[in-house]
Image 1 (cartoon, rainbow, N blue to C red):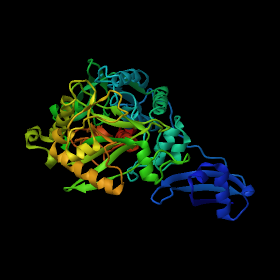
Image 2: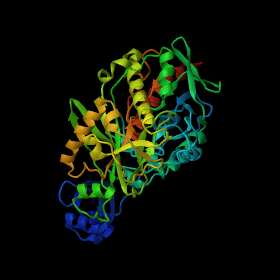
Image 3: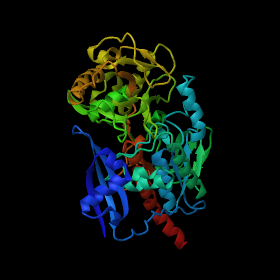
Image 4: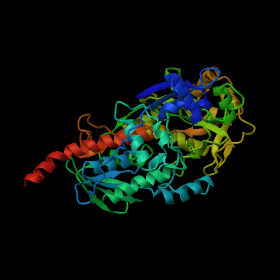
Length: 529
């Protein structure tokens, strides 16, 4: 017999196979010896009660063997001689668009301004040592995009836009651990994701697709309103009548390029703030209601959101057992982000805490830039952080959390995971008031939700400014194309339509499907000829 059942277990019961089997048998009122197959389908932690519980959904067979598991198949055939489609960017949107194009019988040609993941590691190591930033190879740019070396969290709410489970299965097919197929909040880890990304790239090239690294887009080539190709910084020309623009939200120069080419853009809301780091033990104590975390529980996480003066303030990319990393892409800016390795075993817990910013919130002095006003304001805040770090490269301005809320300079700073180092700075004073005042009030509210959160043992590090794009590249809902340019398909975070690895991957697949649909008439005509 076969069934799917839901259980509420202790952490130990969920962790140990023999205890899990016993709980399932008790639920079914059978002997554990009758169970032939047991597999966890979904697992999540409920820490609201005094003793944390694990919600588990399991598939169980008893008195009969389970059928052979069906392994998802992906139609990755050779497309080297087929119709080419240019993809700008080798982040999740670009890579998953390429895989989907291959399944559709089209040849992807990926142009990535950064380096492959292996070479990129060297430039990131230099960043950690505060030896300078390579503006084309860093945490933002390179094979796999911003997620490759900054965490690999795969949770998404974008179920209406596509199938998140398919994305997880493709990651698993390319080497990610099967645990991502079970966890409610799946996570690969920045120590393992580069290998998975490399395997995806190998699939693309082995099927006849192309990936060109260190090729920075400088112009989209048009014949009237029709895409005919693109030009890169070294003068190379790539020809195709379809181009998927998947550059990521940190490619500010791409927005400038589109604006100068007269390609319509739209202003959109975004968010900026700071990254806050606590001792992981403190977050564990608050969330699990115990001074010592059970060996069967992972490092605790949190999700905070509130309204302050009619704007949302919320946690973003929370990294339990993680590190704060330098995530800028320019010489005169300080941008921070967070990441966790697969084991999430560092002594620190960090999260972005950001304030919603709407187009009407942008100070008047930036309005002259039109649709790029939010982008220019974002750049100003990043440069402001750089100007308040004492001229010390990627050293980040920081302040104890309690001092930030009380509006006083920190005499010293706690230990922090941010390797380039910190310098004490009055963030409460120099951050724009539309951000600073809301953050300070939100931290008080967060402390009422998580008693002990507002503490001087925590540190505020500036600035967290790349949680989303400040510009949208418009597209037609039906065709997926830019409303004014035939053959231009905006996708991913840089287009303003997604956020995070999984949702960007889904958006990339959707863009590829739209490309394929647009090329079907051409294929039919070609067959008749």
